[in-house]
Amino acid sequence: MNSVFFFVAVATGLALAGMSFWALRGASQRRVHEHGFRALDSAPRDLDNMPQIRQSMDPADFEFARAKGGRHLETRLRGERRQVALLYLAAIRRDFEQSLRVARVIAVLSPEVSGTQEYQRIRLSMMFRWRFQMIKVRLLIGIMPQPQLVALWQMASSMAIQMEQAMAKLGERAALAAELAPQSEK
Amino acid sequence: MLQLPTFTLTAWGLATALTLFLLVRVFLLRVYRRYPFFTFYLGANLLQTAVLGYLYQSYGFNSTTYGYRSAWATQAFVVVARGFAAAEVCYRILGKFKGVWALAMRILISCGAIVLVSTLYFGTRSYQLAVITLEMGLEAFIATWIVGLLLFARYYAVPVEPPAGMVGFGLGLLSCCRLLNDLVFERHVQAYQDVWNYVSAAAFVGILLLWNWFMRRPATQAVSEPQLNTVQVYQSLIPQVNRKLSELNQQLSQFWRTESPKP
Image (cartoon, rainbow over all chains, first blue to last red):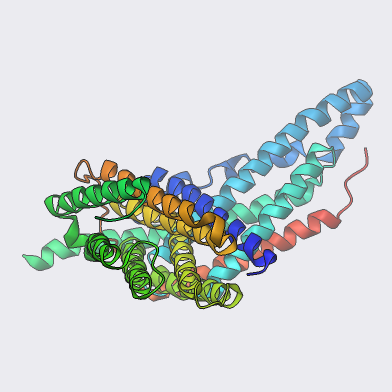
C-alpha cells in the first residue's frame, strides 16, 4: 500500500465519519413534514413592495439629494439604500430557496426521477449561490447594480409564484382525491 | 482455557453481553419485524463469538494456520451481514419514495463500487493481508452507502425514523472506525497487531452502547406513508424549474459584467 493511498484513504474515512454526523444531525433535526404542501407556507409576499423598492434604487434620487442637501446627505442616502439592497438580496435568496424546496418536494413525491434533471438543478443552484455571494460582496463594497437587482428579484419571485401555483393545484387535486375516497367506500 | 490477552477477553465479554441485551430488546420491542437483517447481523455477531471461542481454544490465538483463516472467514460473514443491514436501513429510509430511491440506488451503488474497487486495487496484495484488504473494501462500501443515504435524506428533506437513523448511523460509524483501523493495521502490521484488536473491540462496544441506549424505550415517532404524485407532475414542473434557474444564473452573470452607475 503506497503512502498516497494510505493518506487519501484515511482522509476519506475521517471525512465519511464527519459527514455521517453532519447528515444525521440535519436529518433528525428536521420536523417530519406531511409530504408536501407545507413548504408553501412561506411563499413570496414581498411583491407588493416592488414599486417602492424600485424607487429607492433610482439613481436620480441620489443626484436630487446631492443637489438639495449636499454630498453628506447623498452619502447617508447611499448607505441606507445599500442596506435596503442587501435586504432585497436576502428576499431574492429566500424566494430562490423556497422554489428549490418545492422542487425537492416534487422530486421526493414523484415515482420517477430523472438523474439528469436533478444533477442540472444541483449544478445550477450551486452556480446561483456562488454568483449570489459575489453580488453581495459587490453590494457590500458599495457597487450597486440596481436595475439588474430588480430584474433578478422579479425572476426569483415569479419562479416561486409559479411553483406555488403548481403546488396549489396539486394540493387541490390531493384534497379532491381525499374527499372522493370515503364517498367511494360508502 | 483461552490464551487471550485480558483486555481482549474483557472487551469480548462486554460486547457479547451488550449484543445479547440488545437482541433481547430488539425482540421485546418487535424491532425485528421491521429490521430483520439488522437482527440477523446481531445474531451473526453472537455466532461469530461462539465460533471464534471454539477456534481459539482449539488452535490458539496466535495461530496462522487453519484456525487463523477460519477466524477471518467468520469476519467476512459478519461484514456481509452488516452490508445487508445497511441496505435494509437505506430501504427503510428512502424506499417509500420510489423515484428518489431509484436515483439513490444508482448513485450509491456506483460510488460504493468505485470505493470497493479502488480499495482492492490500491490495497496490499500480499496473501496474508488479502482478507484485511477485502474487509477494508467492504467497510468502505458500507460507509459510503450509509453516508450517501444520510446525505440524500438531508438534501431531499426526507423524514428519517429515529430507529432507522440511529441504526444507520451506528453501522456507518462502525464501518468508518474499522476502515481506519484496518488501514493503520495494514501499514504497521507488526507494531499495531494488539492495538488493532483493542480498537476494533472498543469501537464495536461503543456502537453497541449507543444502540442499547437508544433502544431503552420503544420508538414513538412513526413516519407516515407518502402519497406519491403522478410522473407527469415531475416531468412538467422540474424542467421549468431548471429553465428558470438557468435564466436566473444568466441574469446574475449579466450583473457581474454591468458597470455600476457612477455618482
